[in-house]
Length: 146
Image (cartoon, rainbow, N blue to C red):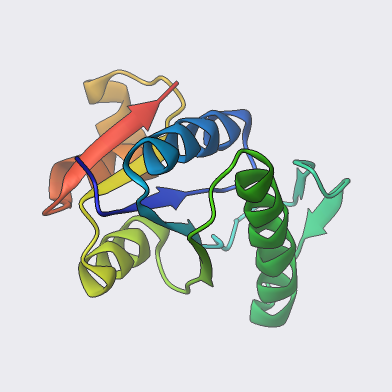
């Protein structure tokens, strides 16, 4: 069904679930899997804890790149542990929704798999969630996981 897929990760529990689903789909179809992280410059201090311990997220591009590489390395290890053999990792820059969509187009993937916060359409649109923007703008299929 899928020749290639992109899973967008951000270190959240929802993106962990998206990675697990993407691994299942990739194994099922022996598909190429692209793990993509698009660091977001946050307006307020935040912490990321998924698989790498607590990491303070700074605003410098270098800090975001280092943290992003740790996040995708951990995700690649998890994908390998779940039996996916064709995995490529990408840390991309820019506004996350646009960067994910552009990467999906550049790679020519069949589907994007990503987590969502579970916001409804109106609330998601008002808050500008990444998954909402990707779902409504991507040219390929999008699977969102709550």
